[in-house]
Amino acid sequence: MHFSQGAVELKNQDWDPSQNELSVVVERSTHVPEMVFFVFSNEWVPLDALLDDKHVKIERVAPEVLGVKAQFEAGQEIRVRFERV
Image 1 (cartoon, rainbow, N blue to C red):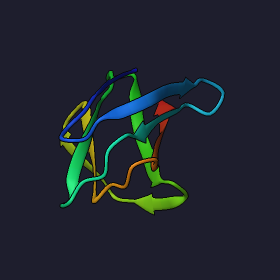
Image 2: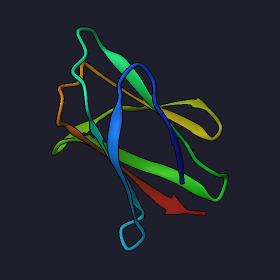
Image 3: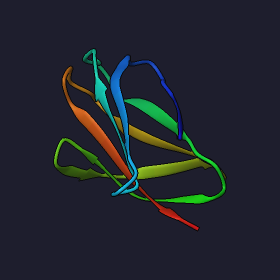
């Protein structure tokens, strides 16, 4: 898995192969909604995303890029679950 950050800083990136889940922690709060982008290979399909424990909408911005948009607070965890094709 590969990730790219938008206008927020990320830390504690972790891939859990048993759950096919990528998690990152937002390091800085945003004052307006921002988008964090996740780039993945064509061997994977994103299933859903959670911000802390709340489901959030994911947006496919390109075939292998998804975005999670929110007004982030420092310390929030973003988790994205994938399924192998």
